Length: 187
Image (cartoon, rainbow, N blue to C red; front, top):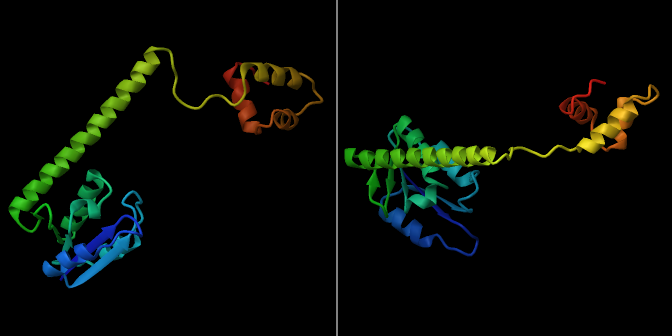
């Protein structure tokens, strides 16, 4: 069976031209959706993908109608390939049921992996440069050094409990303990 998927991003847009193209391509069933591509959960796409069986083909008008990113597209098409389901994009003339189409798609996959590696390398380089300038990543401590000193002084009074001190500083006991430990107090 040839199954089509059409998506527009907003309620104002109309998917009629996509549906017409999919019908012309021989789609027997067409799933339509009005959802932004940025959202991972798209109910009609999920239903469409569950409907497909071995030997079927999924057809879209354009690649960006199916996936949020190149990585997402590669994952979807690899899943289809693993289930022995073909994939066609009308606008880009990609057809994974042919050897040439699979080659083009593998090139896309390699580019997606390359892009992912570049992002990871740039992120690591940025973090290394920040550390070299003395900056540390992560969240700032909830309790300042001054607050921790005051908490330690309060805890030196045997009548004060950690729960009372934590409540005074509006933090949890775990945060209080972590802050005391960070500043070298063993109370």
